[in-house]
Length: 419
Image 1 (spheres, rainbow, N blue to C red):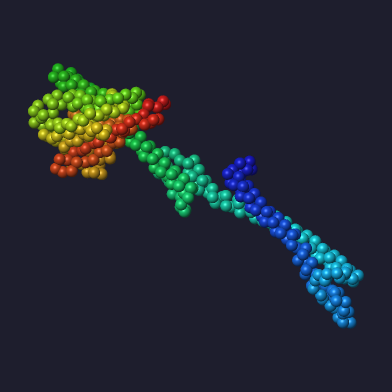
Image 2 (cartoon, rainbow, N blue to C red):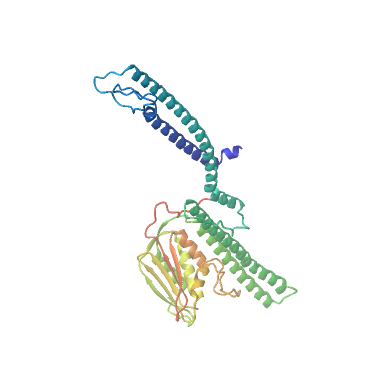
């Protein structure tokens, strides 16, 4: 009972019912007030026209006939007779009695009607409040039953546009985002476990099979090199996962960073020969257009952003291809490469963790599929917009643009959040 009394439906019922009862009571009171003002004169006029009257000209009525004389004023200077005074008194008494009886009957009928109206109003208010709050109950029940196993369910409220319809649609949109995040988290955990399990399995197989018995020194050396390569790959994967986690937490410090100079430094490290292609016929050439560009952010994370973009552009290039790097004064970092043709529908998928253009073959220098996802995470941490698009034929490859904000907005969530 207490739960019902403290429910929103009970409050709305009390509010609607009270308003309806007050409106009905006000209407009854207004009708009574208006009738009281004119009821006396109306009853008196009606009674006067139906009661036998006395002629004011002094003529006697016809014997045996009742004379009905409408109420009139006496001429000036004419005094009423005893019969006229008696007739007036009788008329007044009858009129007052009729008026009081009509008012009493009207009051009783009005109160009875008001009581029935109050009961009907409370019932209608309860029914209407239930109708109005039904979508809220559906949303509440859906939220109570939600778990990781039924995140695919939606409210899908059917009804005319309104506040509750927008609330249900907003809740469905929130469920879509939650389902996407949970799915991405599960996929990330499964992929990370798979990626970490593979090198462990390789190391175990190399140790158990390659070093079984009494292997010769050359075999031991090969197994040693293999184990070191697998360890390096595992270390790189773990560092990439840590970097992805750090970038997702936000920025620890913010300072002006010369992005053009940073890109030049990373280019020098990635292309010791200057990117002319002379060191190897298969090495891609570099085209640079580095306009002065200073952004606010974390220099270390921005260095990883540029480094991952360059590594991705080189790894997925073709023999004798090209890498184009540019910075613009309006806050855009652009990295483009030539390479295999990529379908436009596959580009968003490449920005997700452990996503590759082709299936992994576990070959040297293949990468873990975290490069572009790290770039996207660092860009989000800096409030930058990342846009990736496939290059048309015949060049192929991918173009990635990172547009940094012109100035750090006040209160922007760019500082690392405490957990």
